[in-house]
Amino acid sequence: MSKRIFITGSTGFIGRKLAMKLANQGNDVVALIRSQAKAKDLIHDRISFVEGDLFAEDALHRGMENCEEVYHLAAFASVWAKDNTFKTVNIDGTLNVLKAAKSQGVQKVVVTSTAGVIGPAIDGPVNEETPRQVDFFTEYESTKYESELKIKELVAAGQHVVIVNPTRVYGPGPLNVSNSVTKLIKQYIAGKWKFIPGDGKSTGNYVYVDDVINGHVLAMAHGRAGERYLLGGEDATYHELFDTIAEIGGKKYRLYHIPLGILLTFGKIQLFMAEKFGRQPMITPGWVRKYLYKWSVSSAKAQNELGYEVTSLKQGIKQTVDWLKENNE
Image (cartoon, rainbow, N blue to C red):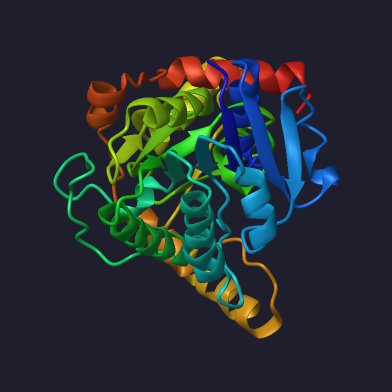
């Protein structure tokens, strides 16, 4: 049956694909957008727009009117901000969405968080219940974690909210900050990527974007209120990642190992320049420190409870490379 569904973050990497999938399934999707110009790739007979942001209460209430479901994907995921933007958007903005959803009688909400809230894999792959053993590396992680705590309180008060935690997402889509892995793939196959952080043995978990989209839909249908579900893909070291890209792309390029000490110094300089002149840094010390750890992830809970499925890294990268070539990206 067709549903009326509200979505934030609909012009983003994941949000756009999710909105299109829901509309193609015959649902009526109401997308919160900042401007019509940002929504030019969201044209669909079953997608309508409400202009505003996470703090435009009237837009939120109008958009959610008669909606059964809400997907909240909008977030601030930059490397750095000169003010309280992380807290304002990721915590206060999320609470505004959930408050409006409750007021409008929305039955279910899925909120997109990040696997980064759980932390690195100290004693083997992390799962949803793994206690965090090190401090947060970035404000993005810490504010997403705080928003999850607020969500738990609302669930305890009777609201149905499910949290999904994607890992490092890649695949066809806008080459923006949320799709940095695909940008890396593009640069490597063009012979423009030259280095590997540290010794190249740091493990990451890479998830194909279509799996994340399906995971959102499955979480809405089958997720338990108050639970988080890791939406992961395949673990790979940097060496394994680049070897796979090289195999698919058809050419292997020489890469240079950059000692983490040098990267850390560079990050400190970048942060100093950002704080002094307001210039967006390429990387910060917190982001560099993430390279010191392994980020292995288990998606067993999502697979067992939701029916979530994982695309292999090799298959996902092949589809991504094919798309890059077909679209001259």
